[in-house]
Length: 112
View 1: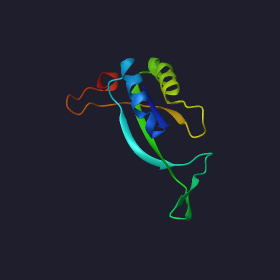
View 2: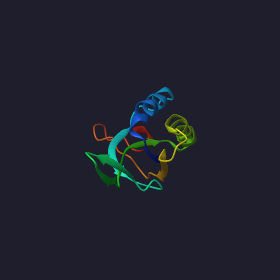
View 3: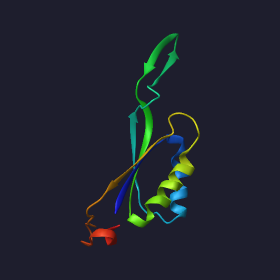
C-alpha cells in the first residue's frame, strides 16, 4: 500500500476530488494547510500599506491506495490539479506498512 499526499491549490479541490471519485477512490482526507515553495510568498496592499504573505493557503489531500493504483491516482491528481503556473503543488508517495479498520478489525488492503 502507498500513501499519496498531494499539496494543491484550494480552488482545484473539487476538480481533483471528482476526478478521483470517477476512478473509484472512495476515501480521502483533506487538510487546510499553509506553506511556500519556490513562490516564497507574495506582497499585498491593504489600505495603502504593503505587507508580505509568507505562507500561502493550500490543501493537503491524503489517499491510501494499493500499490497497483498508485500511477493512475498520481496521473489523475496531476491532470486535474495542474494550472501550468507556479504554485500548482507537489505529490509525495510514501510506503504504508499496515492499516486497521477500527470498526471491524480488518487489516491491510481490506481495511481500505
